[in-house]
Each structure stands twice: as structure tokens, then as C-alpha cells.
Image (cartoon, rainbow, N blue to C red):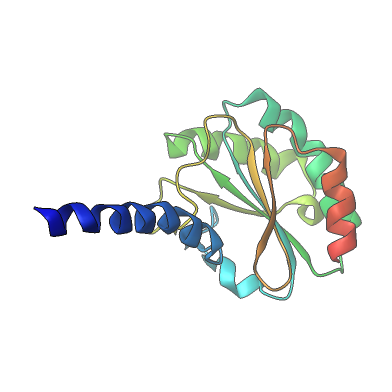
Length: 164
């Protein structure tokens, strides 16, 4: 009994460190894009990446899309990529949204899009927070340098410019 009690503080200490260590792991996202192409976040190493979890049912998310597209187009030719992961429960919701985008948004303003419900989708970022959008800014080495909940603040675009 004494040895079990003596080991308890060590076990608790290890548990306390485990989430921190996991948070330090490079972000990993893989699956198929909505247009069926294989995707791995690791393939974007060497680029600054804004990874955003969103939903078509999120008004703030939909409201931010024009701003995201403008910035994406403004950094064309630079080592920058935007990756969006839809957390919609049904693929049909994302498909309906994509049908509108296909008709209304020029190709140069479209970014990589995945659906978290797709059978081969995996990530090591855990469940996105309740508040969408949830965004991660990843530097060229593949390390998360900023996290944003809700609206992406204006300072985020300055940080992206700095990282480029």
C-alpha cells in the first residue's frame, strides 16, 4: 500500500505533463480534400499556414470568408496556404456551400478544404473548441505559433506577414 501511495504523486505529475507534451507535437492533419485529392498538412512545411476549423452553420465563419479570400489572393505567390476543415455533421451541408462557391468565387480565391467527417480524415489537434471558428497559425517549420478562437483578430494578418 505504501509503494502505491508513493507512486501516486509521480503518476499525477506525468499526467499533468502529458497534455503539454502533446500540445507541443507538430500539428498533423490528413485526409481528402472536398475535390477528392489526398492531403497532408506536413506537405506544406516551408509555408506559413492558417488552419481554420469552421462550419457552414456558423454565421461568424461564413461572414469571415470574403476577408479570408481577399488575404489569400493578396498573398498569392508567397509561401502561404489556407486550409479549412469543415466540422459540419453532414457532407451535404458542405457540398451545398461548395456548389455556391464554385459558381461565385474565382479559382484564385479558393483554398484547400477538408471535411472532418470524411472516413480517412485524421488530426492530432483534438476536438475544436465549442466556439468556431477555431484557427491555428503555423510557421514555416510546421510549429503552431498562435491560436485564435472566434473571429480572427486583425493582428493575425500582421503576424502572418511577419512570418512570411
